[in-house]
Amino acid sequence: MATAQIYPSMLAADFGRIAEAAHAVEGRADWLHVDVMDYHFVPNLAFSPDTVTALRATTPTPLDCHLMIADPDRWAADYAERGAANVTIHAEAVDDLPRTTASIRAAGARTGLAVKPNTPVERYLDDLHRFDLLLLMTIEPGFGGQTFMTEVLPKIAAARRLLDDRGLDLWLQIDGGVNERTIEAAAAAGVDVFVAGTAVFGASDPGEAVEKLRAQALR
Ligand code: DX5
Ligand code: ZN
Image (tube, rainbow, N blue to C red; front, side):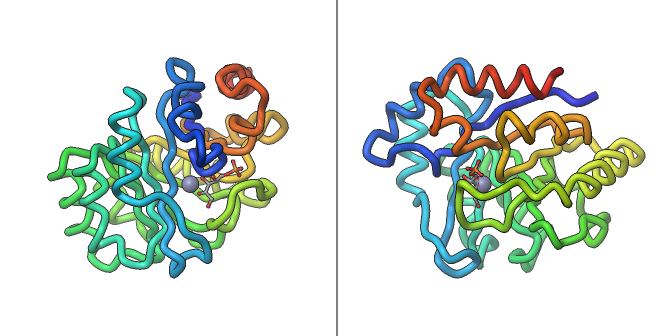
């Protein structure tokens, strides 16, 4: 049965007031989503390990780090050591999946597997048991404010069935274009965890926006 966790994406926050943004959703957001980009895996640059350390010290809300970087094998464990509660790596970028997931877990974090819209989940069937979360991108990764790709909905529903049929206890997360208009269909397809950037931090009251999104997802 799907729940509805809402993770505001800090990429959509005002970078001059990052702590204020974190506080604005405290007690409303389940976790905070922190995008990490390296100009290689995606054509954008975002949050460093030091930013994760700073956010960790700023808010009690757990941090969900989404690594859109070319060499997650090398850097993933550092984000766990900095206090991320979950570290998600991209399937398209990881070389040694067993070793990297083990290093994240050894550092005390949960771990997630992300796939871009055109990457099939089936390719990683034998490795899913190593993860706590499966992230299906609903945009091409790299930038906030893009349009939700409705064509990913059948993939979401299929992944939900796959996890249930195999008794795999992973949270099913989506990221990209989640807002009050798109969240219902995604919830119906079986998503547990919704990342939302623009829809939360573009709102006049981010905390209230989180509650509204959750209510829409649970309808
Ligand atoms: C983009 C990031 C997303 C982004 C989502 O690659 O992974 O987390 O912040 O932004 P919205 O919700 O605006 O689509
Ligand atoms: Zn993200």
